[in-house]
Image (cartoon, helix red, strand yellow):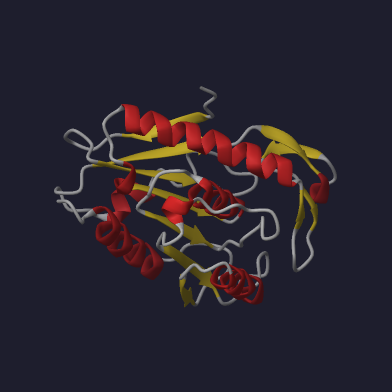
Length: 222
């Protein structure tokens, strides 16, 4: 199997669920590691957090500079022009991480794929195309990238999807996020959306809502 470099945060007891959390463009696996403690999850939720690290690749919109990226962005238009084959490749590697969690005894329906910004686009691609039912997808300050070519897996045609977005986001506008939402609805999905008084970032209110959402999605068996 082909895995990314990654950071893993283990729960105090044997894990009964997993969150695979993808960082944004130019960041790394440590970017969201501190949020685990801030989520203040109850002890019944023994969640393993996995923070994969994207490889360094040239990014066209940044002058070809090498930086951690899940895929190349060719143009920062309202509909992002991206290297879709790299998006699919990254999603397939996330599938390998999910497969590994199944081998470690985690039920697929207790696995969440989360992502911020570019990582959220990969989370959507990976979660919707995985062949077994997952717990949900969390897309933060993000967008749906593979709108034309995606083949949604039958097992995840009703997958819970939560968008969180900042109304002052100038990197990925709220209009772009809402357009992504509509495209998902057009594909037969039922994503949910909530906005916050923030820019391209994460705020305390959002962290509280993320915690509640995670507990709802992986708490069905506990």
